[in-house]
Image 1 (cartoon, rainbow, N blue to C red):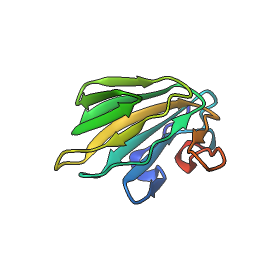
Image 2 (cartoon, rainbow, N blue to C red):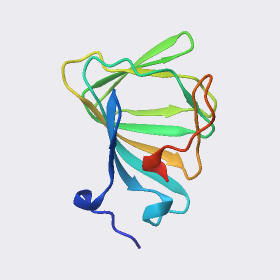
Image 3 (cartoon, one colour):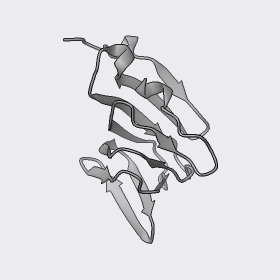
Length: 124
């Protein structure tokens, strides 16, 4: 059974967040990917969907999620289940980073309007 140590896990970042790749095919997982997400304070991430169900397990901070007409607030200890093909947008309204463990089945693709589907590098 593979052990992915934090100090050896790959790190990725973009304008609004950072990601620590935990479980993924390149690290021995065959069914699920998992990563630690840190969403920066004050960020409004672009809307997107995934072709598979995605689960967020909140560790710290506050996350605002908009799905259609619904806006949800996710806080430490909460779990958010985003259905496949549900477009949603994430924002961090707080002054502190929002941290979560995110789980997505292997091969799950991000669907961003106007772009080709993509498997995020932290999930490969």
